[in-house]
Image 1 (cartoon, rainbow, N blue to C red):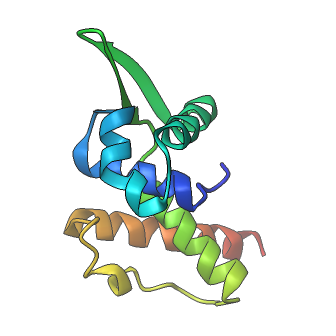
Image 2 (tube, rainbow, N blue to C red):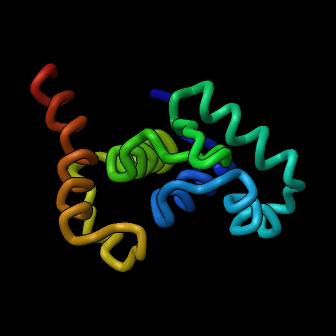
Length: 127
């Protein structure tokens, strides 16, 4: 799976934290901070829907969106990419580094640690 870009990640973080939201609610929450117009927010969400990263549902005549990809797996992929491809780091990556994140519970930190380091364990087994 490709990784979300910063705009997509902003939408995902909002949906993970707040659950089902209309495009207007997403825009009101994150659009101004991104410098987006409402049409930009709708475009980002539409592209994410095409990728299967958000799902659309009509509730009482209002279209709402929900994150369709797992938060921990997505963040784990981003961390792994940063560490391996950008920083050229080898060895186990400490998920405890993210313990202060308001986006992750203790259980999710444990899961993140497993996700980050699973790819390395898999590649070591193949070497």
